[in-house]
Length: 404
Image 1 (cartoon, one colour):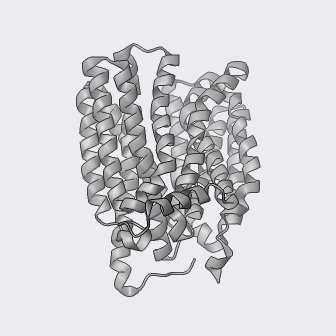
Image 2 (tube, rainbow, N blue to C red; image 1 turned 180 degrees about the vertical axis):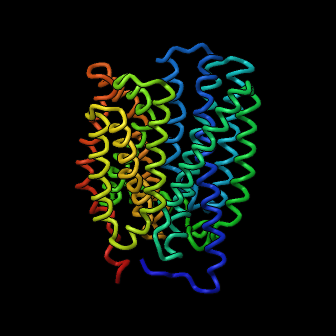
C-alpha cells in the first residue's frame, strides 16, 4: 500500500484519523455500556432466559436492517453527517429503552428502543468503516485493525463503567440516556475531523438517487463483494461466539466460577486487541492473504485448545490465541470491501449486511447445539467455519487495477 498523502493534506488526514478513532471507540463504548446493564433490564421486566433472548434480538434486527441502506445514506449525506444522524438515533433508542425498562416497565417499548438503538449503531458502523478505509488509503499504510482495536477498548470501558453504574444502583432511566448524550456529543466532535465528503463519497446531490440505488444493487451482484461478505460473516460469528458463550462455556465445561469465566473472556479481548494493534505491521510487510491465512489457522488452533484441553489454564491460553488469530479478519474484510473508493459505500453496506447476520444466527445455533453436546463442545462449530473461511481469503486481495 503506497502513500497517497500530499504534504499539504497530511494535517487533514491525521485529524480524520483521530476522528475515526474517537467514533470507533464511542461506538464500542455505547454497546459495552448497554450489555453491562442487560441483567438490570432482565430484573426490571422479570424476564425468563428465553424472553430475554428474544428481546435482545431486537437490537440485532435493527442493526441488520440498517446495513443494506446505510451505504445509500452515506452516499447522500457523507460519512460525517451520517455518523451524527446515527449517534442521534442510537441516543433516542437508549432513552426509550431506559425509560420503558425502569420507569414504565413496558416490554414492547424496550423492544422498540433496542431496535432503534441497533439501527443507529449499525448505521454508524458502516459510515465509520467507510471513513476509516478512506483514511487508511491516504495514510498509505494499514490502520483499519487499529480502529477496530479502539472499538474493543471502548467496549471494555463501557462495560466497566456500566458495571460501576450497576453497583452504584444507577437507574436505567438515568444511566442509559446519559450514555447516549455523552456518545452523541463525542461523535459530533469526532466526525468534525472527518475528510471532506466530496473526497470520499458522492454526497451533496452530485449523483441521483436512482444512480445510488443502481450502485447498491450492482454491489449485491459482484462475486468479490459477496465472497468478502461471507468471509466477514465467519469472522463475526467467531467473535460473537466468544462474546456470547466463552464465559458460560468455561463455567459449564470446566466448572470455574462466574468471575473466572469473565476473566477468560477478558483474555479473548486482550488477544483480539493485541492482534489488531500489532497485526497492521504484518499486513503491511507480507500482505493480506498470507497474514490472514496464518491468523485464521492460529484461531482454529486456539479454539480447539480452549475446548479440548484438560486443564483450565491451558484452555484459557487457547482463548487468548483465539482472540489473537481472529482479530484481523473483520477489519481487513471491511478494508477490502472499500478498496475502490468510489464504490466503497455500496460495497461496505453489502458486506456489513451479510456479516452482521452472524449475530442473528450465533446465539440460537450454538444454544441448540449446546443443549445436545454442552456449551463448551458447541464451540467446535467455530474452527470448522474458520477452516472453511480460509478458501475465502483470496477475495480480500486488492483489485489488480489498484496496483497498476
